[in-house]
Length: 313
Image (cartoon, rainbow, N blue to C red):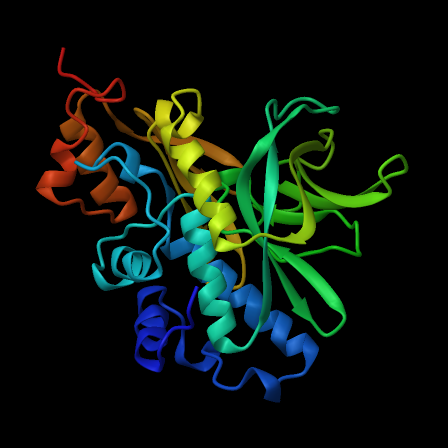
């Protein structure tokens, strides 16, 4: 994806409510520790102001997902309607932001676990995108497109420490870990992102990825399948997640997540419903009230006749 212009970068900072003091101007002037702090701050604000959502497949007359850079910038930033995208949209967009600032970014593919409760998972084909960001000799996995169980901090590829993702350090916290795996038979290395709900719950894999760079053409093919196969969760469900930033802006404390007609807020591990959703009107109003997402009339009408439409009783 091409770099953003200075004006576009300024628009983006304003859109994600990034304080002026935290807006990087010259990454090369920062040491590695400050570069990592910069990356964390950008990641937090991206997750909290650009939602993970698949509305292009439901609230749209076209029912298609575009990875075009110009389209993504308009939808996410220029429209100022609270919209985001699913994994390949959000992660390719965020990669362009990071490259513009001066980070070294490699976009790679991932295979998602079919069962998030399995300790020995069966993975799907390539269906997810993550970014690997290099700071000095260290590499970090960064993902802004996996919903409420995705990583909320850069995950080191060389450190298998278990890192608090959201909530606090008691049983309510969500923890993540990146684990390196080496296959003797093929002599290849890969990585697994896994998470635990609470400090004592077992860690179970969410997806597997490698360091092999994927091209934009690869993601176009992957996105076409994800957006068009009737078997995928994105086609079968209307989903959206927006993370919640702590008052001091230093951490993520939870999220607001829509799953079809269920809208919940999870804050410090405690989950509660936000609205009773029975009809399409209920859902559209709840998205605007609780997540700040405003859709155009033609987008709202686009879901009519689909299996995911909520019909009045």
